[in-house]
Length: 142
Image (tube, rainbow, N blue to C red):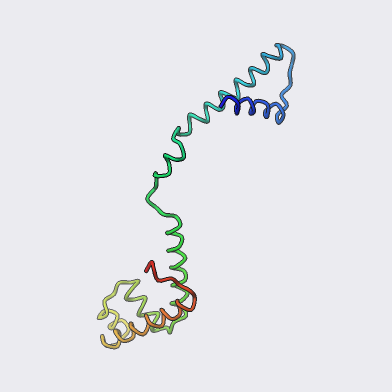
């Protein structure tokens, strides 16, 4: 640690080029610069935790950023695939899976029989699956 601080002192001398006024000895002037660098280091260190990186490995905010990113990307792919479907297929998937309507409620909205809705829903899912497979969508997370 002291070697790092000494290197920081010389780096400051090179980078900032403070002027030596001659009011004190060179040794005192150099010591005051070193003291200021050490104080700055202690201030920065007090703001940071003394926990090592190895100890921080287990600390988590319970959110897997990579997994969340993959899920968001899959949602985007899914939306684009749904847009490519027949409009009735898009509508039935949207009503049942995004708006949580029952098949009976969706039948009333679309003015179809419950049996037609079930058949249409099956066909919509099959069409969607084909589109997603063509685009390389992975079904593991679904």
